[in-house]
Structure formats: structure tokens, C-alpha cells
Image (tube, rainbow, N blue to C red; front, side, top):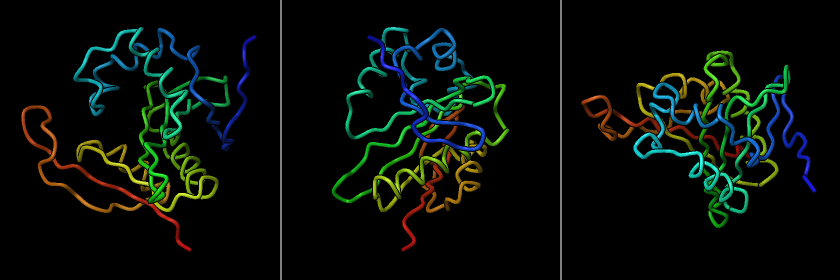
Length: 180
């Protein structure tokens, strides 16, 4: 019997739900192997097959330290990317947030920042985490802007952290935390 997963976290234009093996489609496979989509993802350094993608999703489904969600646009019920909260450090109550907007048609339209805001609320208020962190390449201005638009702050810069396009580039670290 197939399990039907509804909206896990509801937003204005999107909802987030658990990523399922049925989400591992040709479209998802194309995203993860698209040089423009994955240019800032560390996964670009190793080949991704349909089988390895299925294994990754299957592993996240049983991983209690990661919340791995599909970003779905309500208009057309279309899967356009994923957002991950984790790994979660349950002792110190912090977690990383990572976002991949695979569907380039939806880039620059605010879906990333809406997903970040939804996951931020979930992490801080439902999971009772104290702090959320993220990082990106300095040239990935779209990512940094999405986090800042969602209320995050730039916390630090690590100089010359990543080797990218023939030279070293800074790593921008962003964070948000409970304000109470």
C-alpha cells in the first residue's frame, strides 16, 4: 500500500513535504547533473547516477538527524527543489540548512527564501533548536540573498575557503537563532 504524504509545512505559494523515492525522476536526475544547478553543490565532484540518487533519498528517509523536504509550488503542484535541515545536533540544539532549487524556471522568484523561512520556523519553533546555520560560496549571491531575505544574518566569512573556477573563493556563513 502506497503512503500518501500531504503538506508537511504550508507556505503562501509553496509547501514542503518529505522527499520520497517517487521524487527521484528524470527531472530530479537532470537537476543534480546540470552544471549550472550544481555549480555550488559539493555533489558536483562525484558522478551521480539514478541509483546513487535513490540511495541518497532512501538514506535520508530513515535518518533521524536530517529533515529532507521537497519544495513544491502550489500552482501546478510542481516539485522544484529540496531543502534539508540537518545534520541536527540535538545536544547543542543547532542544525545546518541547505537548499537546492533545481528547476531553473523558478529561480529568482522568491521560492528559496520562502522555503528557508518555513524551515527556519519549523527548526526553531517546532524542533526547539537554538540556532540554524548555512554557508555558501561568496559568488553564490542568490543563495546569500535568499537567507538574508528570510531574516538570517551574515555571521562570518572564511577567506579563500573554496577552490572554484581556477582560484580560491571566500565562504560566507549565515545564521539565525532564537531571539528569546
